[in-house]
Image 1 (cartoon, rainbow, N blue to C red):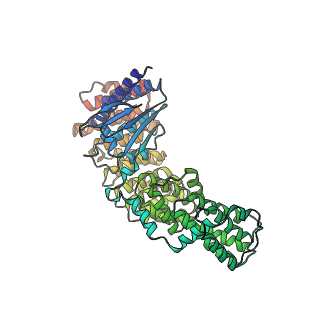
Image 2 (image 1 turned 30 degrees about the vertical axis):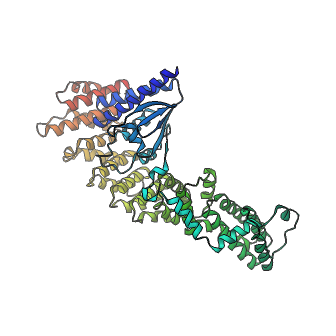
Image 3 (image 1 turned 135 degrees about the horizontal axis):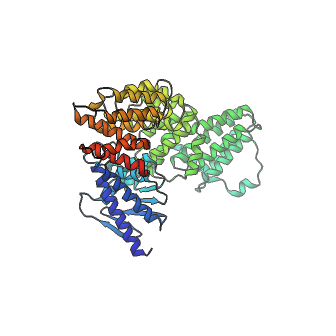
Length: 550
């Protein structure tokens, strides 16, 4: 493909995305226009990927670029796709070859949301993150997500550290500065007295080089040679703790990790007495206390880059005492990126004490509670259901929805009764979440509850979109009982409340299409020419799905 044709195709593809953004907002999911727009968008991406492995779009305030070529420009505020992404901090979006249709549809549904008029809990970045796309990636300007009154946060933090530099900071600097290479190589290690330690401190004050790792080596040598002397063990423990604190304050997690690894190795070795191992346990517990985890939060918020491998190893070595401090900073961190990092840490550490982690469900901040539910759901311990059931009456709808999603994945005792009650919740989003959870459980009890609710005489009074969710959930069971039920609904005649009646019939046609049973085709063809527009469109869509798999 020639460069000019390449750029032209990208421009056409982008225009198609803009068209799809409008169409998906205007039409319901089963409308032929909705389906056609999605198919057209997917086909264009497939054609592009015949020549290329990925498509990367760079985003400016009023323009979008591809390979340094401007492919979109709009100086207006209304209907400005570039500004739509830019204002939420997105700076690049890339699509990878192998992009599935479902992932493209979810992406288009997100950008089709009217954030100015609809009640949407999250921004574009958060919604993209929650979907965890595999073939759609994006780059976010994290600085853009910080409030304006926090813009000088880094400068203030640095000044604060300088102003509050303590004596122990100076001590640590002195420690890490002092010893020269040649002084360590040829001198045999012998037990050190209190007087020797004092002399060591004095020597270290003379140099200014950063030798923190050498300090750690010396302190562990003291432990190796202590022979159970409690005074040396106490001193070494104190200095190792201060080393951890000093290093974390300055964002050097590598040193903290090195201390933790060495302590773990000594703890697992049969060569050291229990007295020494007792101090190793204290060292391993120390990085998980509230003070150190709070310093970790400051490091993360400051934007200091921490290598993924180092952070993962650090998290894996944390003990369960770190759970509560991690929950605390989760509610205080300022950007999506760093909150995600702490969430991932809690998924690892939380497994060590599920009950302590579950106490986070009592937090007063709804967003912390929702994140704890997400963490417990990802841990996947079915025993957590008992904690979720206590949170199902939370005052925030977003929390209730997350709870329902979790119990729909994990199941457990008491789940069905709870979900049955949530089907009558005052909030429609909670009711719909309950319907989806029932479908996700996929057991006979779920099916019977859904059939019972749909058969209830008050069901027809629900809004059409909610009804459709019930029928879509019912399509999980592709058995004779569900098929016969749908046929009866579609054939049923009524002279009263005919609009509501036709909505039910349209939903039944929709569900028959999802089942894919060709035995439904004769009946669907009967309603393809119905005088009711809704039933006619849904019957046509169902026929198309069954006959062509679309």
